[in-house]
Image 1 (cartoon, rainbow, N blue to C red):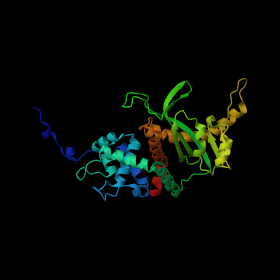
Image 2: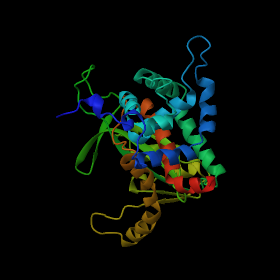
Image 3: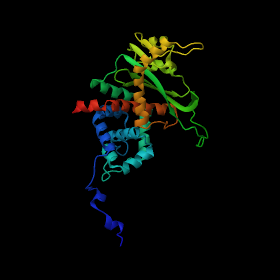
Image 4: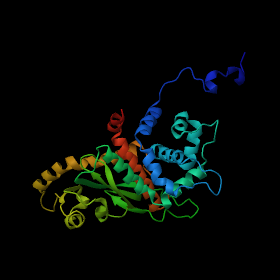
Length: 323
């Protein structure tokens, strides 16, 4: 004899779970909730956020910002984050959404909030505000900068409304492999691995061309791989006191420069730290493909993403400071 679905319902189906345990997602969101400087970021965005004087009251700013960060952490599109919020209690709790009081903001509302951030160039402002927050917590940018870049893939298919690939994306060859997309260039503090500068270009742009935009000017040493060699003058034009610590060529037609090879190995021990933010961006946050068409939109997204990368890297230290 089989019971119908109504007879099988328990208190768990109505929200009174008897058996539960904290999930990794819930623990992650609880920790990030405690270390993100919500008041500072909301104060930054509020002057540009609709007041609702001429129409319906807007959704609370902090709620929209929390949803925007959920998209960053879990690599969610606008429709996907709406679905996830309806599906996952932990995400709704993080965003402060009670389905008994109000629905989840729809994908159009989420998209409009992102466009607002892009329109007012608030991605770099979020990165700067987070870094100032880190300075107030004794995590500061020092006098050493490591520069590097990573390729972010873009869809190469032409099966879309325009019938062409993303117009601002280009291809480049690395080794024997061709890549199509954008390139994220970052300047990272050599001690705290805080990303303090971010620029975005097509994948075909050489790393060295973006070097001046990645320095803050107070550097005493600048590290980079061999893609930045021969840029001593460009470095000193921005940071007059900086020493060029970029790697040098070691293999020539008739010999190998063992001394330069040894120095490159020593430099690599410091330079390798720049890979930490890239690992978090791609492996932890899952951002391996550009989500939007155009360099500008993806630059805004990347600036906010690296702000969250900086917080994630120092989450344990920030949590201890709050305890």
